[in-house]
Length: 285
Image 1: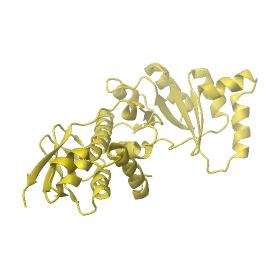
Image 2 (image 1 turned 60 degrees about the vertical axis):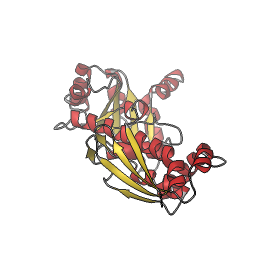
Image 3 (image 1 turned 180 degrees about the vertical axis):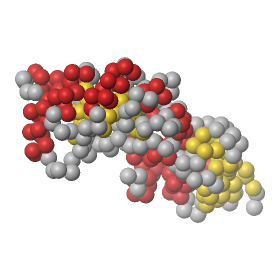
Image 4 (image 1 turned 90 degrees about the vertical axis):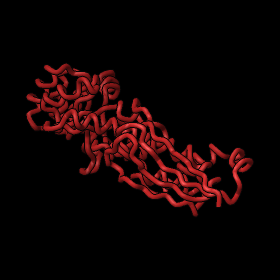
């Protein structure tokens, strides 16, 4: 999903936002012929993500700038590690610095948080998945970071799959339409390749939903005992996803109830930027 075209379009817009009429400071202070070498250095442990995006910030500023990625996306690193080396005209390096850092710090932060969640559910059947709670315009970037951290992606957009949530079911109930009837009618309209997921928040909603032959059932804000009951009731008739109340403190216990997927909005909406720095050395020619 994160193609070079998407990267270049988004990074170019970020560069234009940051320097709409050029980098006044660099142009006023830095000699035109000055060159710089800059090391992307980790200040803390984490998972690297966004190498191609980081490179694009410098390439789109000055195609002559060279970016050598020392680690791969998805690779854990320790504090003090050099993650990339940037070499080229000092003005261009300094102009692109903040945008390159913004992307790679954000993506690496998401990858690191995801990797921590994935480690918490090791040796269970549960997969960690993201949600649509992403930064507008940056979903492809943030979802790539989730994959780099070992997580899985949920549906990318409203156009990708049917996901009936509590508000959809509330509207149906207001109209006197049963979930089973509505879902069966939807299946008649949709291509056979379309996946259908339904969110429920009460045990008694499970059977009417399963009666329609849906692919995934989401148990939202269920207690641990309710999750175990729900998994036993579904009994393999659909993929079981747990959501709501998920944190690093609770995710292991949720995974041990036997659910197949745990969706975690915090992977993208609450991840902090990882502490990475660009240490620049200016060399006079």
